[in-house]
Image (cartoon, rainbow, N blue to C red; front, side, top):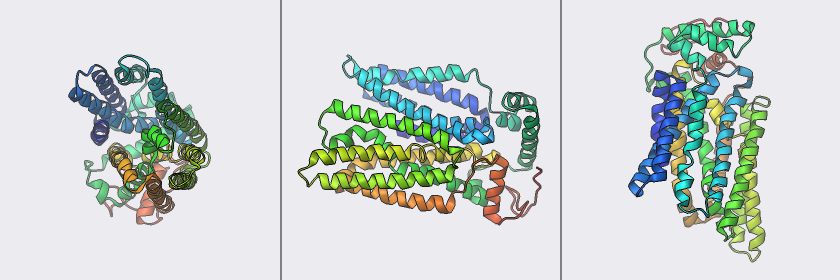
Length: 424
């Protein structure tokens, strides 16, 4: 039910963040998560526990959209990718901490209640700290208060850069003023927005189809499938894998604004493919060999390499790209749609993996994922442009050029055929 809640939350997040702001939407997500965690911790029965899981998922879905968009709109162009990747780092670090918490509570009476209830603590902490932060300057400028937006930007940029940023925002605001009300169907009707959503939503879908959350959800189970029968040993190995995920994400923060999003994603996918082949071989040969210990450790090495390659690239890159490639008017709604695609794909993969593994074997299941990774590599090569070091306005123009050809002032965003000018 948590994944169902995440799907619903992500679907509503675009409208919510565009209407009420990125900050208030994030605060709302934190509050829902806290309520859900407390409900799970004190649940007297399975029905209330399911309600709590749905609320927690709802909060996760909302935050998965609002947080990256808030960070991207408040970040200088040259470090935007790294700061968005820091959001992914906090997620992977949280997964690592959750494994530690689970391990710590394994011998405590009422184990599962503590495991679930204590998750309210980080959400409370984020709620309190978020109160100290300003609203997204871009949202303020477009929706509410230009002077307040300028005040927020003055905390980020020096006076010379501030003037340039305000000029860009003024041009973007003038363009948005001429537009009609944004509708979901416009995402599919307007070519440049459709191409952007195909790139952003497609990347998030392939992020899940590449099996990352299957590995994270089921790593103890996969380790046991590989031949490690001890529950505690399986949990400890999973803890090490979660730690690798955190370290890899830190590397991604360093690389994403240096080597670029596209190059990092392609390198990541190539390494993930090799790791999945290694995993497949270890399970296929291990099931028919007397050297089960060798293939068990080979599977663990494959899992570790998978995380080592996935975490720096396909972990943060899809979220970074999905939060920076849409026009201002569509950033909330497209971000929400992209995250919804992500959570739906997550649900499908996580619910089907064990059944597929039972049907054709774990090695065969990893071979299928390896084939999907090949498709993802081709997808990135063909449809995902490099956005590193580009302003939002430059990214918008790039997708217009991809949609209508490389010519200046090609088409109006909502009225194809109407020309407009971009200053600066």
